[in-house]
Image (cartoon, rainbow, N blue to C red; front, side, top):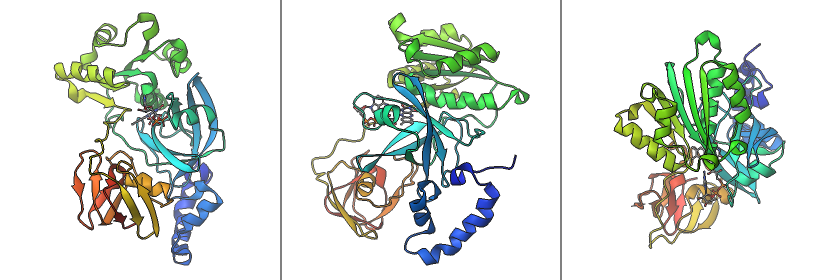
Length: 377
Ligand SMILES: Cc1cc2nc3c(=O)[nH]c(=O)nc-3n(C[C@H](O)[C@H](O)[C@H](O)COP(=O)(O)OP(=O)(O)OC[C@H]3O[C@@H](n4cnc5c(N)ncnc54)[C@H](O)[C@@H]3O)c2cc1C
């Protein structure tokens, strides 16, 4: 079968896109300035726009009462992912785009070219109840670049331990499905998966994992139910259920309390370098300083102005105002959202530091305006 690309919804062979369509678009650029050919293609179908990658929901699969898997056909701009990574997903709700981060549960090279994410509805949440309960096939979501280091090492590890709780199983499912896909020819590592959920009905991917456990000699899968046992998964359980945990490279994802306990346990054993941890809750941003009054923010090249409070990141303010903002991880890590400050003062929402040097490159996802501000965008 010829190699296929995510481009144009996975329908065109990669060589056609690389050798014909991409050069044609490049040649057409002077004719469409100041817009780009991609902007026009995006009007025809958002999946054709390589500048603002998007994907179309093709199907939905209920995993539990409050968690749903979304199967997504990525468009032209999707650059692929490594197993275990996450991506920013944009959903349009009430006229504006809201972004949240979700782990990819699909292996990088699914035969049908689809991506999957599994979303658990957080009660009172803005985006997750929509994605878990209300999104419909055909909906277009925006996709940020895949990122994160909760991935498989280049050299296979002979023994692996995975400890997860609740929706923390999602990135590990991406890893496991990738190991499964690699086939017996490569030899499989010996994998122990300890997963915690309130009960069997709330345990995502349960049927798939139980079937895999029956079929595969290399996978041991243990479910811990907090309702029945009256307690959470704890270090004593790792010792009991996986006595050779010290010899295994470990991947852990779940609530902060579980991850803190794991980090402490591995730290005491001097094994931190064999532990990979993924956290879904980020360190809270610094509270707004008394001087942080926000203000009018002008995006000079776009000719757009909006007003922000002292806590809204400039990235979100720009998107709310309809500016095509560059973005990446949306959490201050990847520097994909850099924009030069033209004038004004901004506050780093992580540290509270104030900056006012014109020309300074700002991480717009973690900075907010302190008074009138202008960005060269
Ligand atoms: C690297 C990474 C990977 C992630 N992968 C997944 C995934 O695969 N599946 C998945 O379902 N979620 C995942 N998340 C969490 C996801 O990004 C959202 O935070 C979550 O869906 C809630 O969004 P919301 O808009 O519904 O809630 P918001 O409207 O943002 O928040 C509403 C309320 O819920 C609280 N809240 C927000 N997030 C969480 C959370 N994760 N747990 C408990 N309370 C929360 C907030 O403090 C607030 O009180 C991941 C997060 C990160 C950082």
